[in-house]
Image (cartoon, rainbow, N blue to C red; front, side, top):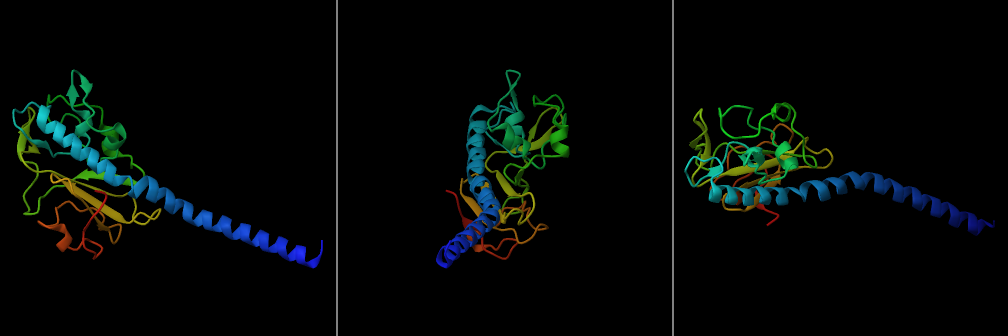
Length: 222
């Protein structure tokens, strides 16, 4: 092989090495973005749709035209004809970081044997999901009573849910997402692992409020 051929061969090998390095670096980020952050808006939209169905059919049988606000797993675990109603997928229900514990509602018809999920929820593509606690005015979302134990677990006009990364920045997941009864999804940078969980709706207009990472909430995934 002449000198020119050797140079071309070496350059080709170097190009292959650089390409392989780029793939190694980018692949985790692409995996998280494609299967994680870009998946979250769709998951939150499915919760929004589930709430609309819930309000119409009153599966908790409290006689009120209300939304379920206690947790996310209940949207799957509520029993109808002795089977899970499954308004959302099982995978999304298992990603609920704060699911209702077994028997919390007494004889309320909800799928039991959920303790393991409560102890160790399973993140969905790197994200946990959770029911938010307070609206923009600081009022609890849980207002209406449900079940034999009269637990406040529903709301006649409002609900809100959040999704946040299992671990901030790993692998390259930085955003926290929120949705409420208006159906608009907002997102912002978490800022850190300690500040990734936001359980109070950020004002009447979230775009005028800075999130935990110091950046304003922005509509996304709509």
